[in-house]
Length: 215
Length: 215
Image (cartoon, rainbow over all chains, first blue to last red; front, top):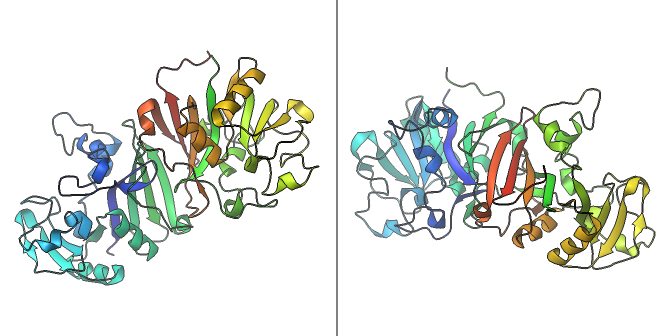
């Protein structure tokens, strides 16, 4: 069974998945790199001196069993990217996805094939429609919902997420885009576990009750 | 040195310290008892079958070294309690504070002496003024800021909290009163530690850098 998953999605202690003032030079606005420093301190990213503990164990699930990603327009690029027909995304020539990636946008354009197996497709679709499209491209593997916070929240509200890994970083951003708004009672459908890490972050996993994972 | 502390203050995963719709019969509104079930499952509260682990260790710091509490009007009683001159609070004849308690209210009334050492005093004061008043009554011991979320937030915003123990309960309330609003950058002044408990809750402690605790 193909699951729909969220992996390594970082939020601040006050619940913001991105800061305010996003731009081409500040992908997460005033949050800067602070939501993701924990990730780059793992052995997966820093092979010589990174930590090999619980953060690393979680971070390595990012690609495992994933056949496609769905992301929001704001993850693909800065506000207004759709006005530049040559724009190929904020992720460099070899993006870290290595699968088909479906970008939700009201401004679809032709697909872009990148190095390393990533192909960006642009669709104007509801969460359920986007998921059906991604599943067709994923060869039976899982779908990763890549964010930003509005996209994750919309998929949660639509009841489409099977497994979710949230990382709470001990900072207070004060402003930006919240993950949790409007999700009252979400816990009823999930087994929730919380694991604090020596690095200071906290891993919160939501596993849908009754869903069968791949071995 | 007398510290200003927050102990056992529970919030939902989405940051609400109380639910919506508070009334005389629903002290935490639609949250019901869900924010505090973890506490009543400790050995401190259930001496015969409660858990003696990390939740119990934290919960027992509630009274330790405390000489007075400051609480908001909404913790003392339901909305509108000030219209009843006989109202003695929502905490029964022997409230669990056992010290002077300063209730912040725009409707001061004469002090009320309860059983067990709790005396309620009613003051219309800023956080700094209330703290000075409570310190005079505390005999050199620490002051507990008892909540609700607006009161804790106001004391944090005023820079008056030295030590804070927050308990994150893995539920999403969706609505109510948030603790974290408007506290951007709070982490700069504190050492923050996070400890997940087998019970499912997470203890988050803020300890002000450079403050000396009692031994």
